[in-house]
Image (cartoon, rainbow, N blue to C red):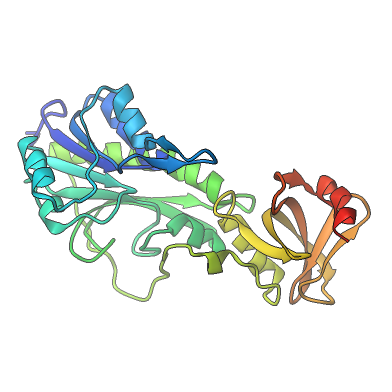
Length: 310
């Protein structure tokens, strides 16, 4: 016998970016009852600093779902409001860390979708870090929350290949779709009671700490392959960067070459449409750039404008 019918299972959904909104929309379309959606408060964004709603809030409005936007997840008002929805289970995707009084509230627990094949790449930036470290495979995982971050018992997992031309943006989009399907499958199994929880393996696995400015700065004394992976792992945002003639230069794409490097850090144009940076071993071809104060541009346009900087 099913533990719950999908239409009677009461769900509270926590999430903020598009990565979470895709799952929210899918489980709603498949007939699950979402009694409330919790997302980050609206905040100024963009050049005009206009107040913008999160992707999850926009999705919830479209689906006509109740929305909560607490600034304090421990406030008595928020806790009482959550209790009033009498949720059976909660789903958390790309949201800030929940206090125990929140994740431990529903009788069937709270599960999370994480953008890695756990226990590898626990932390805030699993997609970026996997590419930056040169991985060729990652995954998505659903697991029940517990005290230590990203360590709970696994519901389901799926491996995903990282292709040589993937960057953080393309991998994000693939994982967003696969992740939504995994959330749906996890809910289906929870409803029927036909699921097996697996403890995460112990051991020394790579971590995925938050990306800081220092992580984005290119060190040309590293190998061309390391820098190429750094560029891929940070594109299109927050973007790897270097300094060029006293200005910040963002690098969105690059290509490996077989040309030996002679002077790490040197950036030189070859002809009208080739730009190479010297690394510790080989030259790296830079193909898509944005100079401080300018628009993002292909390398040919950048080379044409280099003369004005000399």
